[in-house]
Image (cartoon, rainbow, N blue to C red; front, top):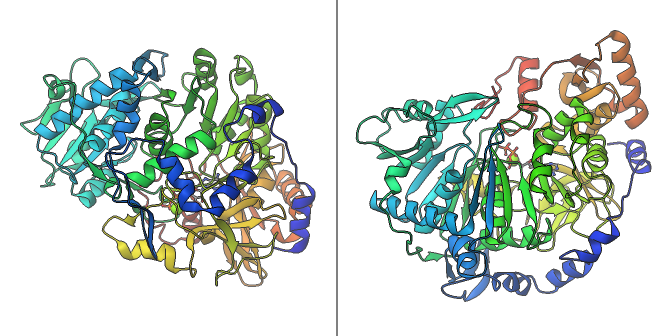
Length: 631
Ligand code: ATP
Ligand code: MG
């Protein structure tokens, strides 16, 4: 990237201080002090967090680091469900609401910690009776319902390794994941309801497991009447399965390093990787970040809009918040069905205080117009979060103004399936810079470096890395240790995230895009995010994706795919306007040589733009693994 472009970006930089009221009451009031406390003694820092939780047996050593393999809380024994459930039920939270659940029609279900505890224990007993043992794999392919959360926790209770597959994946993608895990059991439901339509999950499971010898049992949550048929001995009704089970199941004593789950990455840049997370470190890492990044307090109503089919749902619906004893909202179905008011109605109805979503949703609501959120009382909100992709400054400011009413700090959280928990953001008290994720959270040493691992000067682009192990880091890639080692072998002494980033003079990190997607124009490396954000900042543009195309003169030329806002017509004049706009924003080098107007962009089922699909289409090459492509 050229100096002029960067100067331009920096000139435009907005710094927004967090609201005073918020900082005064924040769980961590002084980021620098907390970070310093970590740097002075990382092991002591993490040990103090771990001590807040229940362990059957205390660890002998906090960290054992045999590059690139880490063990955390070595020798410690615990069970994450004891911290997520028993700790609350035996304390003062038995009748505290764990979940408010809603469907698209606004039908609700309220579940307390006590109720969730009994459901999980019964299911755990049923799993045992069905022959599921510690270390066995169970695939969960369910809608966003209480029973989905319970299924994950029931596995954790008995030490079975769950692999949750988002209930939008096709039969072949599901089959691949079941096969890869050699799962003994699949837990599913008859249907999930999206946009008023029933999607037949069980039918997809039946197709997926055809002739798969490992699957001994399929447990089916039957939601619709008439009840869906169950075939043969293999299939059993969820509630008959748990009906006669006792309310208590002795938690399996898990070593801190015993596996908790396998989860596949989103597949934005290639074939999804089966990330393995373990018990103790993951528990401690997610718990700490819920308290600090999301500033969770006892009386908060917290809503993360993700699905437990993604890491965001694992860490920030199921494990982190439950271990922290949060009251949560979960909502099955589409954000904008029956109308664009749905989410804001829910915020008003339950008085949501903490709200965590993805840029794709924010851009969609932006396109629909602020009249929708403006119909509802959003005054309960006190903190907003974003995750999944870089959030364009334009979308950031909209979120801040229209949803947060300039009262709520925004945490733009950078992290990955592999990292297990948030790594970079602006935790409580740090000023915010729209478009820049922020600083490493306490417990994390992140940096921007060159290929050799040398830190690059501030304001020069490079590779985003993490330089020291952290408790919630993945331990391996399922059945593929070489792939795991690659993360730590690419740049010496660093975990390579695969993203390119730039650090500013204040130490704020801005994610520029995927290393694989970087465009090289006349020897200048240009991140996709900057060009896309420049396009999105034009009033006619709702969303944009850019790719590099081979060019005989420049090496690569930029092609942009643009979705226009409702009511805007494509024209040659608009193409010229947009090019001029990018030139003014970023400089001549970043101007797309081609702009194509499209109705839709290829995205993962979690809403991330898949640039590799655009590129493959454009160049007529093989797009690679498409299992996570939406539609
Ligand atoms: P795959 O690894 O299979 O290509 P993926 O990287 O999209 O898929 P995830 O683990 O779900 O799988 O996503 C992590 C990636 O998402 C990060 O590496 C980063 O590129 C992007 N990301 C997540 N949060 C942010 C954020 N706040 N800002 C910028 N990018 C983000
Ligand atoms: Mg990735």
